[in-house]
Length: 131
Image (cartoon, rainbow, N blue to C red; front, side):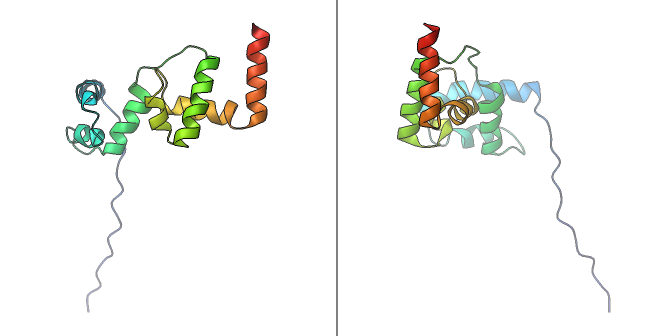
């Protein structure tokens, strides 16, 4: 009797993003965003071999989306609180409603500065003392 060897699951290799892929994601995002299609990332991923819609979305949202490097303003914090109350922890949804902020930026800002009443009070007090 012959024994068969058990095949180990194939481990996928990580492949970095090329400049051409980055440029294409930006171009496709700008082209398709006007349609406000829920399948935006599926449409974009269909242009890339071996990339999922989640990978394309993450690449754009975490690395390529134009970012604001400005200090957070009180008005932005208040808007973030309002949107978090409305949408919960759907950071991508919240970021889409805030100009120039990525989902990581809004998530980190909320979790580090705004997730408790005590932190909100300190933030507002600092704002008023800065004049």
